[in-house]
Image (cartoon, rainbow, N blue to C red):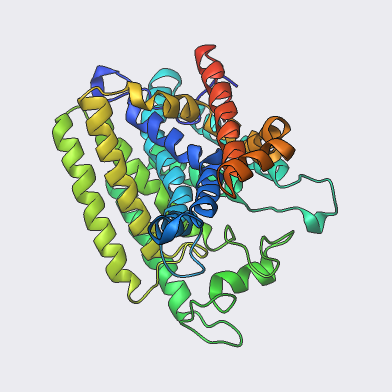
Amino acid sequence: MRYAEGASQLAGAAGTRVVSIDALRGFNIFWIIGGDGAVWALDRMLQNDGPLLAAAGRFLGDEMHHSSWAGFTFYDFIFPLFIFVVGASIPLSLTRLVEREGRAKAHWRVLRRAALLYALGIIFYGGVAGHFGEIRLLGVLQRIAICYLFASLMFLNFDWRGLVAAFVVLLVGYWALMTFVPVPPVGAGSYAPVANLADWIDANYLPGRLWDRVRDPEGLLGTVPAIASCLAGIFAGLLVQDARVALQRKVLWLIGAGAVSVVAGEIWGLQFPIIKAIWTSSFVLVAAGWSAILLGALYQVIDIWGYKAWAVVFVWIGANAITLYFINGVFGFEPFARRFVGGDVARWFNAALSPGAGSLVSHLVGLALAIALAGYLYRRKIFLRV
């Protein structure tokens, strides 16, 4: 599969590669394929090194866990950031595809990519190895596929005004459903776990295996606002692609609009709480805002100032993001690394350095293996993308 899952080919009419988008995609996946485990291990290590370091470790560890329900941590940010990057890549890839092969071909390519990614999601969660009731029909990859599908179709058929209208309708419509539609036997306006409309729909109408048995964080209704997260990325991609806008002004727009989005999300969150598990509209705005700010910062450093060497590892990872995610989820880089630094080797690190050091080493070795694979694929120009 040599075609791109939204590789960022263009930056305006100049046709230069938008390296910051590639790097942002890789930065995102970095935390999923081992960066998170390394932080968890570091947290455990620092608990034995005095109150200051222990507090620092707890802070890092807390940020590398999902919020128990309402709230926003760095770990909550990872998934919507990836969907944002998928959206940002859509104008850059589909515009060129339409110019080269036509609009009908672009529609077919979008449908094929979405179907393949959805199928990979089914396999990722165990495929059809068990009974039908054990198949997880919706999950991370499936949600990405659905968001990519609908956002791409809207991009191909709507102008920017239509995209903005769709974004507003998705967020406001989801808020209205979650706020005014009563949930038996709770009533309307509840956003509590298992007592909200999204969880009720999953429990009653989503077939197959639910992630939490009675609810699913990638469920049916919550996918609707997730499409808006992808549309937010499209807005960023359109801005980056626009050759009429000066490079520095693009950065200002990304960071400025991102800041406004974060503030708007926080304000909306006072009534419609920021909850990743049901992907509330306020969560969309906060996550999209931070995504735009981060993209603006990387665009400034990498694409305008030209400081690219430090991000080469992220570019490698981003070039085969789904492939690395799939390999890590099905086989695991860290479990493989334990074949070399587990057992007595890990216990030696724990005794010689600090409890948790063995786990830290195994996660770092796993990360190194993932980076080595990413670098090998990149240098060989092997891009297994969907």
